Amino acid sequence: MAEDLATEMERKADALVAAAAASGDTLDFSLESLVTLDALLDRLFARRWAIRGGGRLDVKQYSRMIEPVGAYIGETLRRSAGGTWTVDDEHGPGIELPSGTRTFPLAKAEKRFHNGHADNLGVYGGAMAAMGAGESPT
Image (cartoon, rainbow, N blue to C red; front, side, top):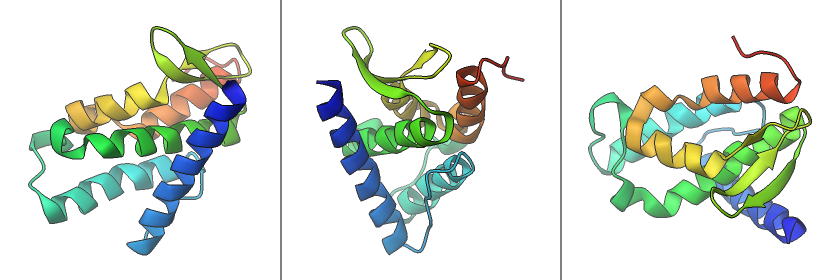
């Protein structure tokens, strides 16, 4: 089942990369690209509908985008920091990093939509990569 999940998440992440490229943005699965993704979310959605204060996005309007964004975040962590996709009955799809730390990128994507810039994707990626390497995040 984890192999099917990994294939599905990779497919969804690749679809997001293609959509970003169509609008002139490059997402390359580097940790730095999570900063690009944060800016891309603001820019793309601001063209279509007003963004709420602090970069919050209307979860009802954008709900179909949460999973591809989460898949991209997870694939970025998997490729940059190592780890594997897992399924947790309580939290859903997650990444288990080499240190044993588990994180849930789809839940993080949903938080980014709800909370806007307060749930910065670049900061999250850096912290998770550090934890995955067994370091204490700064």
